[in-house]
Image 1 (cartoon, rainbow, N blue to C red):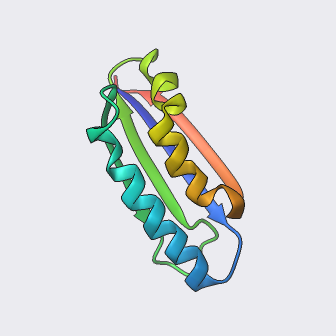
Image 2 (image 1 turned 120 degrees about the vertical axis):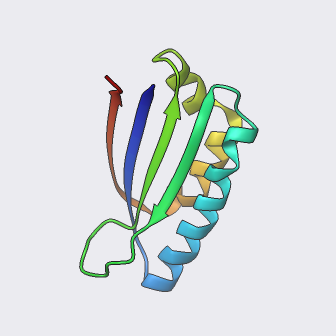
Image 3 (image 1 turned 180 degrees about the horizontal axis):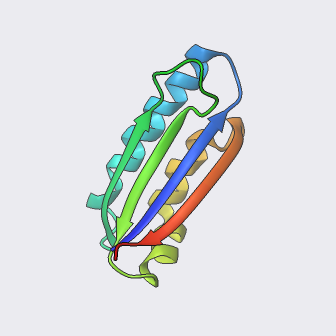
Length: 98
């Protein structure tokens, strides 16, 4: 299993960032029903105001070749478009379960 973990930092005041995070969460968590290669996807929204990251995405696919298929899928790109104008930072780690 390939794990795709991404943290996002958004620009704007807290209510705007939270609204964008909620919309992004809803869009991403619907993707396993739209993208056959995507095993599952979960977005968790940060509840600790002392931390700088707004949310974290955990997505899983079965094989490395499926990761770019998921990333380029139009439904995924539409979900990313929700937060793209406000994106202030992104950190990603991809790894395979051993």
